[in-house]
Image 1 (tube, protein in one colour):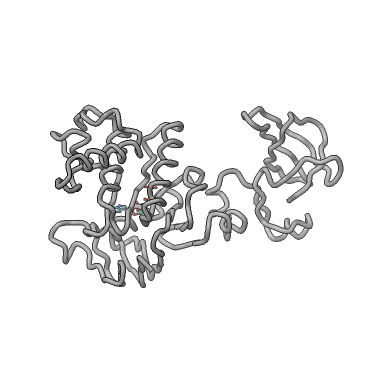
Image 2 (cartoon, rainbow, N blue to C red; image 1 turned 90 degrees about the horizontal axis):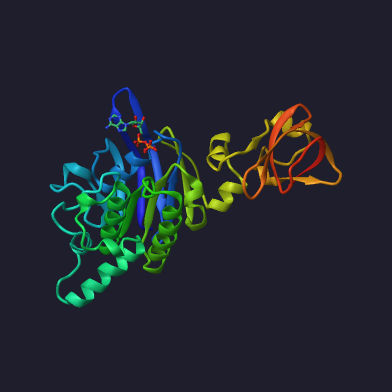
Length: 311
Ligand SMILES: Nc1ncnc2c1ncn2[C@@H]1O[C@H](COP(=O)(O)OP(=O)(O)OP(=O)(O)O)[C@@H](O)[C@H]1O
């Protein structure tokens, strides 16, 4: 096991206890996503692991060694861990390439140059090697900071919302290259996000936090197929939620159905279409079924009465 957090207690102030008896175990070589609504404690947890915040009691153990936080480290931050937070801490008077190469060995300069270019390619910044950070946008600086953190091959890499300043197409490109690099190089990564969709195809494990509590910790597939609570289900986007009473009354097998888990069929359970709207690759429909409004996706525009099948 790479990281273990045991009985951790931490609060930013006396009135609000954020982490109480918090426990977590993370295996080596995994991509782990930390998700949950704004304010649930994702950044705080990363800052605690990295050693920027002092916990009150409990243990954080990395690779069988206890970490002690800022009270023991003169320079903030653990040496075996690298974190890219929402501020990027680049050297302002060094070029992008110099920033990325800062921690690489100077013994073979040709090799170093190749490595810097490889890392810049991972984050799509190879054309900016000679530029100073002050001439880059926030999103570009963030990508340079990610490349620099990868160069150090840390035991554990922490990325706090790394795609937050990127537009959609850049995000899609970066995440594929970044996650592949992390996997191919056997790095261990904890990545925080408020948007599960953006990390979904790449994550080994999803940890859901709410008010500093761990709500669920499973693979993405297990979490998606069996969200423990409404809060978890809603993190995946639109979802139809049925109380136990409704579930029994409607003879359903689950409490949560995502829109594509309700099919439009030739015969079955009759329902009435209230709205049908073009949404790109599908139509978004609001459908009334036995007095309850559901969101259902379909290939065709719908109207009138339809039949539903819950899968
Ligand atoms: N420096 C601070 N002083 C006091 N309270 C803080 C401080 N930093 C965070 N908090 C509080 O701690 C809680 C957790 O905040 P944190 O930033 O860890 O959440 P988050 O899940 O990362 O949120 P977001 O997704 O918005 O970044 C929030 O209630 C927040 O208001």
